[in-house]
Length: 279
Image (cartoon, rainbow, N blue to C red):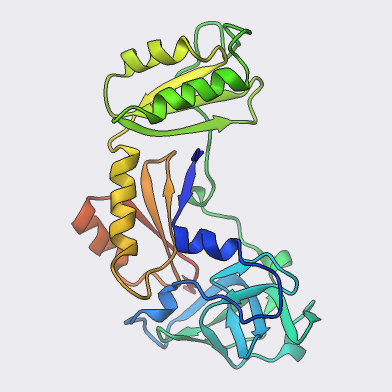
């Protein structure tokens, strides 16, 4: 299995592959299931799919299964009124839509304090760290990012390079800048970069960047597994192999970043909150 940029924890991936049908919606492990000391008087805002059906009332979707009608699980929303929600869809007893919401959060329930807005029209600009940048971190070669051996600048050559990289104990990740022409293939390792670049150049004839990393992919997977194994209520996690981090998705950032920095080191695990405080 090849991992370009992200590795998602298995429970989350399983939800994305949920079958269509009228059976009860699957529910992913979610930060809404965990205790929180969130200030109930603080207003938060975020953009979510909101769904009601399958025996439950309106909920903020932690993740959405690709079925029709969609399926999802997440915290309940108090004060929701579909008559005030624009562009809602309904099918087979399920009602849903994509909205910008504002309200309070008590750790288990989101209470709406103002009517929702269409999420498609109000989506904020994503923070810089929310979008993966696949630009190679290496300086461009003297002749630019060009094909150096057309005979191995193909799928077979790329597969051979990947096989080599994944077999190395110090392998940290690989990704492709598909916007570049020609595409640039990047590999990261924690060990001898010169040796790896020489080996990879003999296998792959396209543009190549070999860069250093602080932790191997296996080390990051071990941290991810430890977080997932912590017990019920574990939020969604993924590996960002570009930055060399484990990402942890929560509804409200409630001190988790500081705790994880203390446990694993600053920046090893990045907490991403779906609800942002309203200043």
